[in-house]
Image 1 (cartoon, rainbow, N blue to C red):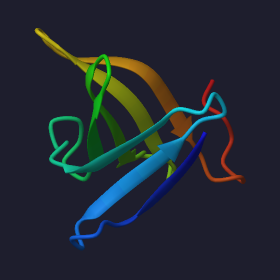
Image 2: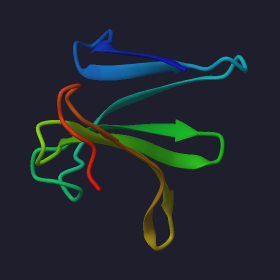
Image 3: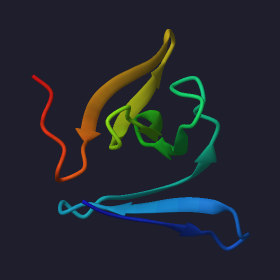
Image 4: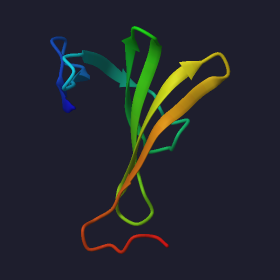
Amino acid sequence: EHAVIGAGDDGALAFWSFTSDGKRSEGRLADVTDVHPEAVGFEAQMPAGLARMVYWPADDGGFHWAVESKTKKGWNRFVDHHYRPADAPAAA
């Protein structure tokens, strides 16, 4: 995947994602503070429904990144990554 975050035509923050299978998506800045008070995220309408990606700070100085799909019961997280600074040891 190649993802780009930047200003859309209207000046609002947006993202564009391009995958190796030829698919693409684009989304808009969204309120994702239900995940973390400092979270930043984007929502996109996909063929299967509404999806979002969320970034938020980690206690170790790194950050979390998650991808979720909207269900009748709320958000279903199906990708959850934790990135750490290169000099930080991995959690046991």
